[in-house]
Image (cartoon, rainbow, N blue to C red):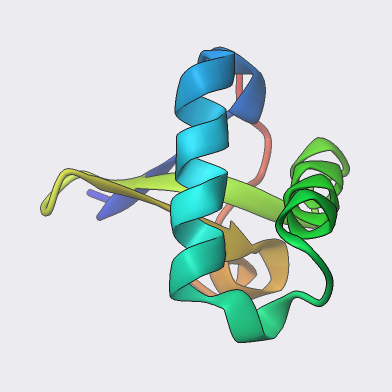
Length: 82
């Protein structure tokens, strides 16, 4: 069984998505350039275009944002989701 599942960004409420993105930015701010609003838009664009995905770790029950390339290496992980 996989340790994590992909959660389509569109399934999160606007509030939950905004909070997750902002938490990600404050934790990994060196990855993205610009102001908070610019970083938020960059990450949202990456989620919309599947360059990044929201993952939920079923063991730790935590959510994260990961670059698609990071998770493709895990067990031939398939990005198709419902």
